[in-house]
Image (tube, rainbow, N blue to C red):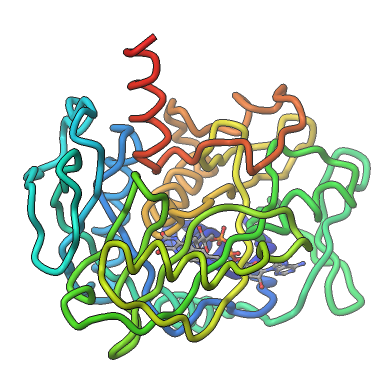
Length: 348
Ligand SMILES: Cc1cc2nc3c(=O)[nH]c(=O)nc-3n(C[C@H](O)[C@H](O)[C@H](O)COP(=O)(O)OP(=O)(O)OC[C@H]3O[C@@H](n4cnc5c(N)ncnc54)[C@H](O)[C@@H]3O)c2cc1C
């Protein structure tokens, strides 16, 4: 069985990896390997049990390739928030964290996060699995999907679309609608005090998140923008101001614009497209691709090998969704959205 994979990030290389384990011949058309040199954060502190399971499985998979560095995870929440949603995660609630300013009506929830050198692993797998750096297009001929790249057609018994924020664009150009939407997100590199660099922080009161960066530096971000819009005016200064309220002086050095995509449920999806005989899709990893990516790629490979499982991420569940604005969707991994929504309900 020959699988042609369009895309070259976490989704694509792990799908190829698990398909090869199941006896498929894989052909990867991967574009550029686009990860930054810094590690991505894998956390298990998330509000949905299914996401925690995926993160734990992904961590096991990453550990086959690298030894992730552990950091203290600090989630800052209002004191009145109902923490029973933290079921299944080993955590500690504290009033004080060395080097982090908390107000009297706030608590910090401490867990453990892992820094994953995603670029190293993805580059290695791309090499080992023979991915090309070509950019391809998706075409539909009759009821079958085909990839076109380097001026030729690349046919497979199956085609996997795994091109990150380009998924819905490539599918749309081929006349296939997907319940995925691309968006912009921003990260700022800052100079902060030494203590801050021990922590991966999710500040659900002020609304930003951050993690240790290269030596002496910290990386922070928030928010969502429409593709092509660019960050709001004064973004770096505004973010540095939020960070400094927690960590003391924070000097912004550099702003990076990145791209993600999300499904209508604020999360990822995978599965077979029912309108085509041979098209599979995996994507919508939004801000937590290292948590869900490898584990979902494994589930997709199982599905393609004929061993499907029911879960909340299957593509067919969302095909009927209306067109949505990615910046109106609360990301599933984000405690803030879930806890605050619950609190409002509780107070109504
Ligand atoms: C600033 C920023 C910070 C982030 N921090 C974290 C974090 O700390 N932890 C975390 O878990 N996640 C984080 N994320 C999210 C994470 O990067 C994504 O969830 C993840 O990269 C998505 O993986 P993917 O494989 O679906 O897509 P991508 O990583 O976008 O990869 C898509 C791949 O497809 C290729 N491609 C695109 N078009 C084509 C084409 N036409 N033909 C062939 N190939 C094509 C691209 O070249 C690329 O290699 C962050 C994202 C950003 C932008």
